[in-house]
Image 1: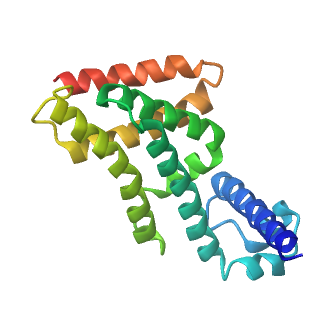
Image 2: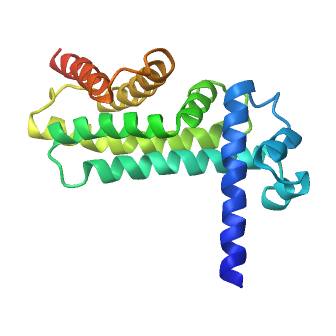
Length: 197
């Protein structure tokens, strides 16, 4: 019985996450109410507060869940690969992730640059964890000679993360029929040219 109850609670939390992501991506955090989230998720307003103390707590948990998943996918994508192949795998993993979680990516893109939010510190830490996976790959590329020895690893890693996010959202909004392989190759072309300069 506990197993069934735990599963139902997780299902409810997942519905609340999805509803919150969609609504906040559509109309912004401030304009989204707990009532809106409950209605979109098909639950009572009290269910939202039962699962999350407030809308802000729900949003922070949403960030942890979404960015944590992206970081895990980055780690899985590069496991055991040499640096050059790992960079291509990172680009593909980011594009695949954003294609699957487009609303979350749009939300992340809009919230990443805001500095007046209660969860800014949480977002900074989570973003740093995702970028560190990229940085590990870039460092390995510098060490192996695949990337220039004087490359600023931190800036290059942040740029790869940010450019991938912006390019993926732009692709899905303005060129959704373009094959993912074309977008990946174009993005890798940019990365390669920057790495050669």
